[in-house]
Image (cartoon, rainbow, N blue to C red; front, side, top):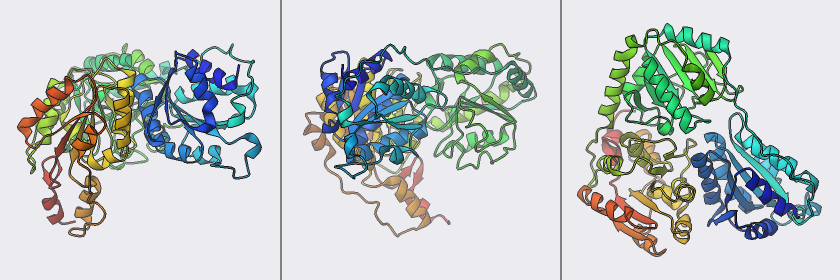
Length: 550
């Protein structure tokens, strides 16, 4: 059996049966192995950046490593954008790169790149296989590394001539088992002491290692202890947003009442979250290195604890075993915290009510309509841009793993992520939100959606601008616009050129009918919403922002 066949066999043994990529001659043996194995699926994408983002999203939505395959040189460097997303988002992912022949390495052969050096700052581990006999050993480790501790991307370089070599030693290796640490009794005792002394605790949940069971346990723990729960940046689906203890999203455009609650809290409990820049409001809501309030930081990677914020109590453990252990914690003082939790919930519900913007289509009403009418299991994806603020503020995520969005803030992510989500869950509806600038960065993946007849509704919010950059530009350099105005195609005609149903909505009242028609289709669809650049953020105008003193 060839190395290429062994690679496919190893992935199947580990429950990885889908790869996203762009075919390349440097790994034709692997493509041949896939073609000869009906249990493995290769999804052909139209550019390596889109393929890598799709693989990363597949890792998010399934909890298993997303797999991407690309060729060397330009293929690998294009895929780097998706690897960066996986690194910052703590997503298990494996990138296979067909490399130049071993005898050509070091000569700057055709499309040669030192892949280990190139990806080292972007990945958890990079490795190049030089010996066919080590194939199973290295892949077993790669799959384990991608999932263990703080999950992330692993890059494996495969020299072209290696792939056709015989590889008989192997595959007796069992599937890798990922172990997750649990908190010690001493840590639980310290947790209980801090909680009993607290009247205004706040949970900040997010990061890696969440499961449906962890989400259920979070709801039970928060209910028993009467602790409000805020979601870290783009992790809003860790708890049903209709749960009475869910109090909002720490993100770009955080509600000032929620920000005030973080500052007023007398105990902060970070469950899985790294407490990164977006979640902490540019490291201003919590002051590094020592926050004013006591901080309990639970994270699966011990190296993450104390990296930015020195916790009062650091627990290097997984979210699910920690929450399981906390179920036995005494509820002393819980009722005294009820009023604090109720107020925080009231502020969230008020912040979620639609607002009026200076544009013909009221985007907050559009998002609110979808929030009220889409099935709870609908997967919603997005990339980066100010348009996403409406989605994050006015949409209620009801079920775990229904928000697939980049905490890395990568534009172009929404459409490839929707492709991955629809392939992972063909029985569910997938809705992709994108801005015009965001969409155009990976718009070629509409061809992937069309080729696979995926049930995706793409909603493009088109303000003919890089809106986020324009907002900062007008605020800091008013009346000196440069580089942020865009010339776009006719998005409806563009979609129809792929055989995809499409419509343009120019009035708020038109959206419900258009969405119902498009969601009823058994295949991809697209709705374009023209948006006035004046409506730069929910309830805020660009003119007022430019006129405000710096």
